[in-house]
Image 1 (spheres, one colour):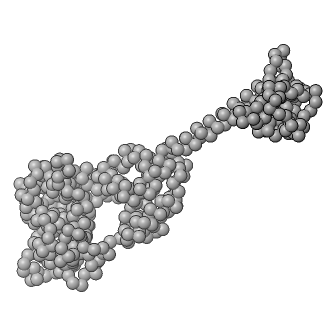
Image 2 (image 1 turned 30 degrees about the horizontal axis):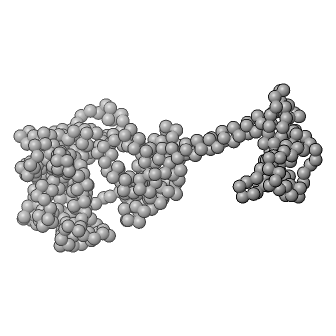
Length: 449
């Protein structure tokens, strides 16, 4: 037996096809010739293990270098000398490599299969968001407008603070700072819900405050002046608003109700003979049912709204696309009021509305800021105060829940009679201010009542 060199292998001709080359230590090569006449030598290590003859492939020259073939042979002999079958060792390595590959594939697939931000949002929506008064509709619209398109397809674990801050910065860039702050609050609620369920370990927005996003929101103190109140009825008539919307705005002023409570009102909640409007807990902000005792002023506007409504159920009805009936959108009145005071906002007039109505609800030329439905509620409370109504009665008329738990538990008187009187005083005052000869009405101050 001899040990072949590379030069000797290169000298092998096609005539030696099928010849076996035996080298020391059980290394055996077989000569092969391709159709094109190329010579190759396939090497195996022949050995016995547990009394059985076996063959261990070491490679084919010249595809595998001769030095590597001999190294494979040497390693196989070393395994055999240590009592290990080289073939079984190779098979074990193959299996281990296969397992490693399959494990990496499984791990990669697991990463791909992780629930996305949108999936987790939908879970939070069903479990928590849907319990809000509007079923979470407003927040859902905001998420699908700004958040879901940006990060919805990412696995929740991969969503970073930077991703969410980019979303909030985009909202701020539109000039919607308050919306950015509300979105921050909703995002933090959703992510805290996920932390509580160990879906994620940390809320990436935990340290972010409103001050870092839309800025600290100042408490609004806008109250319509008597001059503005006198101008209000004519402005409403000239603002291209539906008649029902005009009466709804004046109803808010006459009852200090929230705009959402007016929009959600059903005809069955109203008893004009008893002069009451019952706001169910499901319609109120604090979930407390509330009875409004109607003045002549408020009853008049409710009566007109009832007459204008073509629905058997809703005071301010709207038709859905599927033909079913509900109330008008909760933002509709606020948006209509805002869209008619555009001098205070950086946005163009509504595409479907004449520009001549763009400032139709700016009530006085020297007004420094816009007014909203909630400002009407604050104005009504202030007028009650000017008429001498006690603060505790005003709070009751506004359906404010007593913040002191002890008082709330033990002081159960509802001030119903006092509230009725407060609404009557408010209605009388508004009738004087809003009538055509209101310029002759003296202005009450907090001492005059």
